[in-house]
Length: 442
Ligand code: MEV
Image (cartoon, rainbow, N blue to C red; front, side, top):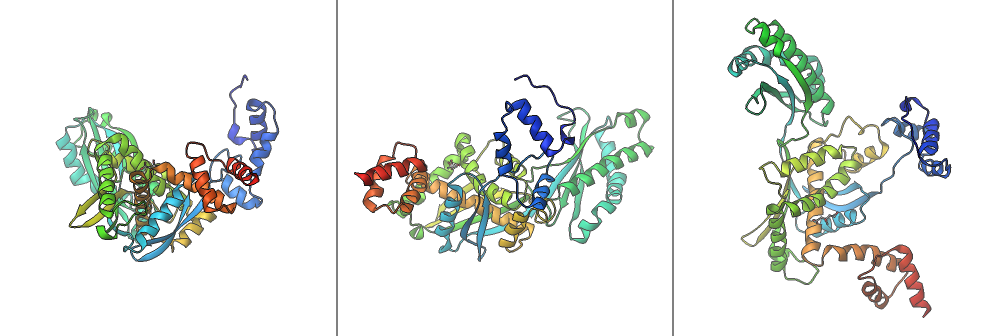
């Protein structure tokens, strides 16, 4: 293959894009075109809608959309929509939901909802002088200059909460920030925040140029580096928790309630102190969080980045969940920083996102934060429960193997036989059917 760079790819029609790819990369094999076409939606309007979500779309990429029922969250019984390809995630969520349903379910608390953004800039001015200019002139002007942009948001109860000048000159010569906090109510607010910040950059430039207290050299030294929201939202936090008396903490693996609680807590402690384990532990949490984030049309890259930054906020990467056993009570919780929206973005556009939000009872952004934290906590509970009792593979085996065997109408004896047979082998649908048929033929 000797490909050439392409000019104006985005301007080609969908068909011309596909033709070009097949010729340049796929040895002119037209069967690849059928693969792409198989995933086009028969409804042309729906297909066009999806194509317009992003540039250079040539097909759709399906993900399983599943439901984890029986989530009792703050007294409401919910069925969670989950878009995820990993086979055990929905099953694990459902199992954890069922475990907690008769123990009071999941309780959540919104701790705060502030979002942050910065205008990063360079100026060669003495910090006190700049602070004085900010306090007595600039801050007011920044609010005034963004009044048009913030009008609708203010009408909905949100807007810019505060703006501060941050001196970062100890870290980088002449580096300062305008650090702003925002309440974006029911929207994730990325566009709103970035629009405000870009206006801050302009206003800062204009006000410095006009101000007589700055020398011409100081004025010339100003450079706006960038205006951008932060996906790290340590002040946009929700807590989700479960608790019960140890005597109610019955696991079906055969170990005692006390042993289960102790082993469970120790596994959480290991994730708290050991970053290698914490990474996998938190990945499992995000299995649950991201699946609902995607199903509700939110940005899973933002939630991932934020969760992991928060897990490392004290200088060492640690667990997002915590566990205590105190006075005979087992308590397990997560503090999850997460910025999501239920208006704007894909929420009003993608039909399945609309379905998800309707299914969840049209939650507010804060209610969605709660649901997401619960989904992460439940997933972590299910993973640790398996890890400290049967081991994780057994659950996967059971999922893959027993479902197929039940479909085939296998007896208990046959099931036991295949559980042993497949203990150290890869389970595939085809292999289970073929082994099952040959056993029956004997
Ligand atoms: C797999 O996707 C997630 C787990 O590895 C999480 C964990 O180990 O806690 C099972």
